[in-house]
Amino acid sequence: MKRGLAALALLATVLGGPPAGQAATAWGWLGVRIRDLSEQEMEDISRRFGLREGFGAVIVEVIEETPAAAAGLRNGDLVVAFRDRPVVDTRTLQRAVASASVGETVRLTVLRPDEGRRPVQVRVGAMPEPMVADRIAAEYGFLVRDPAGQPELGGSRPGPIPSVAAVLPRSRAERAGVQVGDVLTEVSGRPVATLEAVREALLAAGPDGPLPLVLRRGQEQLAVTLDSSPRR
Image (cartoon, rainbow, N blue to C red):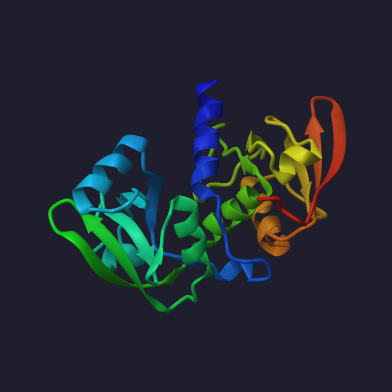
């Protein structure tokens, strides 16, 4: 049960990608891990900074040697605007960053407990391909299990038996009947036997669909197609 909840939490973290039609391998990236504000945090921030309501995405980790680190972003920064447009939650920020041009310098507005509101200029980098593949899977509403049987986000180790670690409620994957534990044997017409092969197939397919899958569930083999029109 705990493993399933952890997988769903990771799935929520990776959700968000560029607008339909944008090349999957050209997604923008800052190099941060973020989370939404709790209700109590929203109230506290509203009072402290005089905002009508609390909003934004909290940076919980700035990854070393990334665009975010080079720009001086810090753990604990609350991102409230991207290109001077409000950031309501993590999904808003993820999609805005992913749709930015690689190499473009963008302005973020952050709130810091010790400094208040301040602008930060960040040069957008290219999202690493393993993360792009995980994002594509998340756009369809599923997460793939790594070799050790734990949900993985952006790692690089190939796995011998790629299987579904989580399925997001009301997602394209759920509507197609994909279930946790299903073993992936084909993705978009490509045979897959490792996590690396799944990612390569997802990169080639892109996030817009439709995405045909062949799954093994126990002794049964199933062919399903994830539709091409996500309902958000």
